[in-house]
Length: 152
Image (cartoon, rainbow, N blue to C red):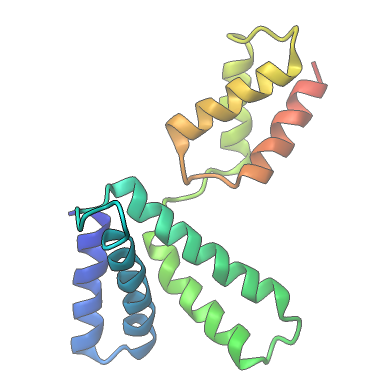
């Protein structure tokens, strides 16, 4: 089952069960997916799995920004965004832990030419993008890579 199919099936389940929060959040995701499918240049074709995942990640990012922006923990908008984020998190890949990232970087360091640190950083970032896309936060990865390479 594709991510899009899963979102649609879960939407129908939420609709039937009366889960308003889940239904509303999944409806927003479905709308974003449909908008991209109908976007100019796509000609109504099905989106790739990675494109659907990017839509989900973008939505999660906007929810996180909303949550971070509002300092008052009792604010209704913040509480709603937090509830939506809990739903959206079900459709995001599991995030790599810092230990897992460090372990992968240690394995890569032996295979890299470390004479040019910027090139080594780029190689590591490209490796993670190719093999673990969506399973890490780029800023966290960059921080860990810089720390690992500065220790050498």
